[in-house]
Image 1 (cartoon, helix red, strand yellow):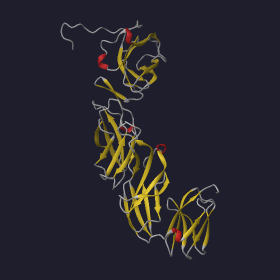
Image 2: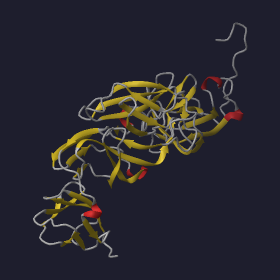
Image 3: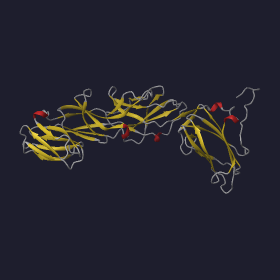
Image 4: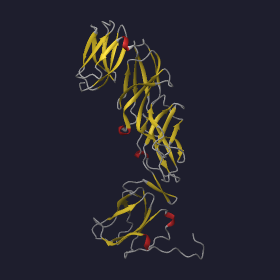
Length: 429
């Protein structure tokens, strides 16, 4: 409020307007950079009568609270006078260009004679907007923009044994911080797992998570200093990967995991399978297609074996938004262990010769020692047996021309246990 005796603010300059009855005052805030149309709907306008409408728009302004003395002729963005709205009650104004965080003020006047008429609006990137609400907010006279940024990765953190969530922060958007929401995959509701200030990197360790017990799902939602946040259901959920392993004897372990990292375009087309005697010594022992959710390791060394599944991003996550990436490429599951029973594989060069590699229609297997009576199987990456044969000769031929291209495992069981990866291709070499 101005002190007593102060000069009152200069009134608005209405530009071309000659119609001032039943004025509607309002303002719009821009959520993005674009050119868009403004559409206003006077909901109770009598469509049986041709009513006139006029409109003046001032702007753009960068701070809402600074415009009281600036609704001047030089700040008029556009002005139209005494037009008849489309379809009787729609006022359409085209081609308004704006940058993120800008304010526009407007006044609409009408000859409408129906009392208590209301107005709703539909206009692209601007808010308030009945057609697409809450893209951005007016917070303390400035615009906070709620970019719907996806989580970059949800991965197992080996240091804390908890789940780590990584996202790329919004830049220059008026965001005060981020709320991290979590739910179990079998639950219908999200709970707040924590809050991270916007001054921190876009990373969060969820110390309330249980990645060694089950899979959990996450969303990250920006919030401004006024407590405004975008509606939760528009944010894409990201799953942690929960791996389970089940030994089935004879050097065999079955692996199963849930779908995670669902945007195929952002990842390599493969998953990397890790195995080792401890979580710290695991190394990649095989690769499989991106969408596969199970695997049978038919060549597991005896004893306790740890496993993990990893998908790798094509571009690294950049939680600080200061470079092209900070090395966060791998999205890895929890480690899962199984106790393997069986005997170690013989050395390949002393036991068997397999050709050609890759194979087109046949596999030729030559044994350097007698294994007559042993069982020979070809198994796909899901653990399904696709070819089976009892070994009767020192050289055997497997017909594989009917199989789809891909990775398979040749398994020998009986007097010895042996497994070798082979590749089936549709081109003869």
